[in-house]
Length: 365
Image (cartoon, rainbow, N blue to C red; front, top):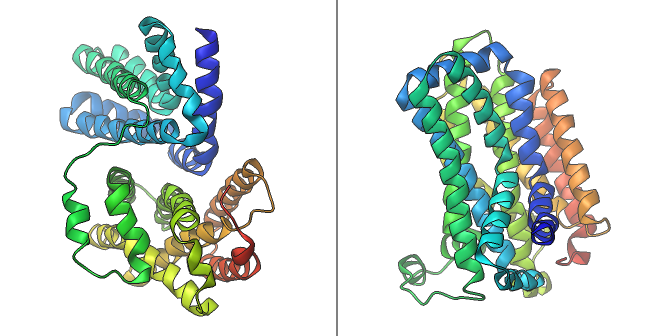
């Protein structure tokens, strides 16, 4: 039993937190760095008394669990991890417990917060709300176990099903800056949907939280930081996609300006849903000019993150450490009221510098 869990922990759990260190950091900084404990208690008590608000929290937990499950399934599908399918040689009970413990570790952010909600629910004597929280967490763990069990029983399974999205897109010629977006729609539609839902959910929450207290524009900038952190997975997928399917593109007679513009247009189009949500929910006392600066800031962080992937001179662990401390740096700059437009321009400049230095020498890990 311990050997199974150790293998899963080293192969999947550790890798998940390594790849999502910025995402986890952003969530923790917002939850416990910007919001006060009294505000958390107010939100929790409101959720315990309002089934609709509690349902929205459950939805956020479910989205996080879906993100975790999708990551784990991709890890199972990786050729480097094919040895994990040997887990099916263990007894069903051992697999059940191992997958349950792995899922518990992967969603521990929401589980720990739910424990706080349960504590307050018991104090407030909200029995049904407490039971629903417990059942929701058990269900999220069980769903993960079912998906993982089904996957290891079907190694290298490829579903032969109708693909309406791919068939529809095949009718149109695709400009180069839409290649990656088309890839996401065709090969990673669930990942695309969940990431967009998370980003939009964050922006809606930030914009609705803004008028409730003496917040300033730094709160919106922090929301932009979370959105950019959530798109780290797209930057990683883009790098993988280029090195797997577009290796020839580096030999094409394209100038650096054309290549940089192509990446810019790709991420600009990817961020259209977030920009629409931001503009529709923009607080009344925040100008559209600041909203434009915030959009540039979000785009610049993702743009810089993408080009930083080309630096293969450092290990993956060192890269994630730099990404983590970059997130801390951005947080400090925001809290010290450094203009977001200035940070955005610096990000674009650094992205261009990194691209010119590492693009042609980069390779997939």
